[in-house]
Length: 316
Image (cartoon, rainbow, N blue to C red; front, side, top):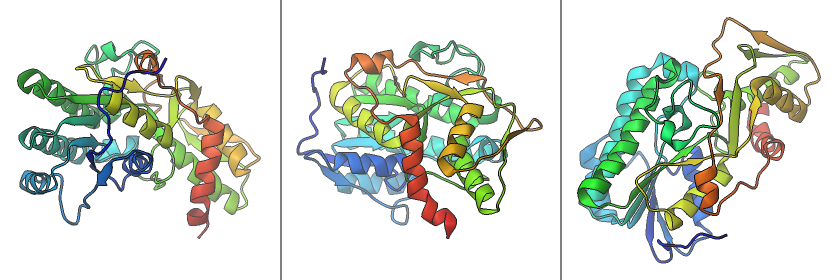
């Protein structure tokens, strides 16, 4: 059953903060199908960590609806290596945008968090109520703390000022515009690049971090963008909403899928000196499903599309 549209985007000035990132660019693509005016600004003009710059630009641009996918992001290695950067920059970005959205009277704002906000040993699938019920995964707690603060900031402005600020928590995302740098990338783009380079060197095997037993959920970024636009139009509540695919795979299964897509016909080896991270991370999608949304892009279809997209740049 389709949910009622309570905030139509027709005729609205919609700002996508972080429009050059993977999620931001997917949101721009998705919003092009809506009868709204998309507004963006690059970091060469506005540094989102600077309150004065954010306030001046938003006062001039006058957005009516705001999506906030802007963030400093990275995988386990990046989070573990630069904890101060991940905590400070993400706190500043979200605080500046959310506070200024209140000051300039933005009608609606959607803040984008991350599934790493949940406790390391949360119940599976993870319900939204699991937030703040246990210790975080140590390898990305800096990023998680910042994202939790963003959720709470939206809730605080809603309670204190009646602002229609909502939050969505996406699962592990992948797609065009992803980061394929082995030092800072997440698991799926890292596996694609490692498999591609192994094949280019004439190798048949692929090495992955850890035991391969942790289970992860993946969602194509275009599905995520569609869900976020849907939430902007149909949801208005204090509680955050999970955005995921509803299914998960082991890292070993994921690696074998990537090997099949890339055409690497060999053995999978495990570097047991590297960390596994959270044992399982599958989010409950019940609330989002009840709002009338479900994903459309399967994992194999999505991985093939991403490899087709990135292969020319990896081969150059």
